[in-house]
Image 1 (cartoon, one colour):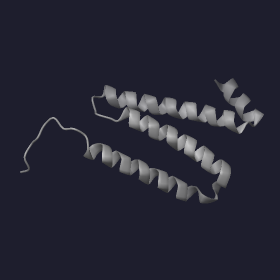
Image 2: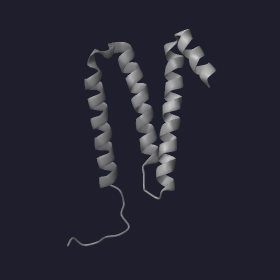
Image 3: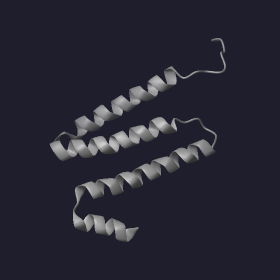
Image 4: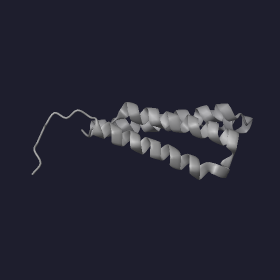
Length: 102
């Protein structure tokens, strides 16, 4: 694995470097969601993996075209969109127990 990582870094190819970092990041995110499911907690694995992939792809394309000058604007926008997505998932999630308010 180190040989692949060093070869990618020393070749200087941006796309291959992006693919390596994205693959490692998404593998770590997948492992994180597996641990959450194994502990018995409910999680949105598909939504989380899509958000992670969108974040990697969006940041690569944004920084490639705009540079690091507007990085805080991009990251804030993306995190707000994901936050509203999580709120929408929770709000419209079907519930099995209908308990009255006390």
